[in-house]
Image (tube, rainbow, N blue to C red):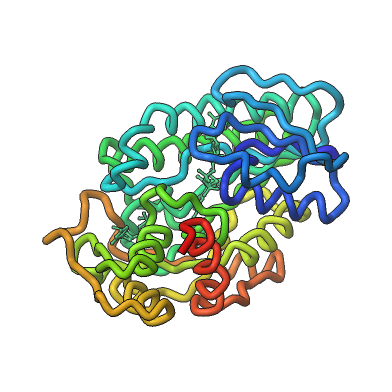
Length: 318
Ligand code: NAD
Ligand code: UDP
């Protein structure tokens, strides 16, 4: 297939590009580098199955030649409002990538009668009141809170994807991605995995926002890409959660990172309270993915961190 992948220079987009090329497909990567990095794709220079278009997907998208599949991953993905270098700077771009970018990407799919897959997120469940989160849960989202620009853009993107499916008969899929980590994450995106690994490698205390009792369920990138690939090849149109159901508190996570790296500086509780809108608990119910895609993750947090820490170490020249 000839595949258009928006957000190809990002963390997940670049791994997905590698997988698709390995499967024998041709990938046209599209990105404006707002949070991505061309280094993530440099190993593909000269590969005849890869080409790149620098473009902001909030603007009309034109791609010459026939496209068989559109994968829409372009969106700044760092919703922590406390991140000093990350999210607060990009609220409008986030809404535009989720709303206008999804509309334009669906437009390409329609023009080429191509299949379409949307990268959605567990954030559409907001600060969930149901635990673990099944795809049928409708969420608990603050429409004007600090994370609303991300959550509402992705909810809009899901609704628009289903509208194109129902009204234009586009063959669509929606993946709800839960917290994923691995090599090629941006060092300065403010997310917990790069923050803690860097702090620990430098022998500094780890900054926990709040009491650290909030939970996340971390999925290693290779597991996620396998799940997305299977969904892509399926004919299932409703959203599917892809993530690792193994839930950990942020405090436990901090201690694990310090233990694996051998950091003696310990953890530090930075704020008395969690930041506004920071979900208290998050864990995917992956029954649907298991049943429909015969998929479940296989990499433990310890093993996944074991593959991720050396990447950050090399990037930091430590
Ligand atoms: P990332 O920031 O590394 O990648 C996003 C890419 O999209 C970047 O290369 C960025 O430059 C590009 N981009 C953003 N806006 C654009 C625009 N207007 N035009 C063109 N390119 C644009 O983030 P990621 O973690 O790889 O996330 C990829 C997708 O997966 C996003 O849609 C994100 O919402 C979703 N997601 C990721 C996670 C996760 O844990 N990593 C969780 C849930 C959902
Ligand atoms: N977090 C933290 N210290 C950091 C960065 C993040 O305690 O230096 C917390 C954050 O408040 C949240 C969790 O870690 O509760 C995961 O944050 P991240 O930004 O990685 O993802 P998200 O909140 O979007 O799941």
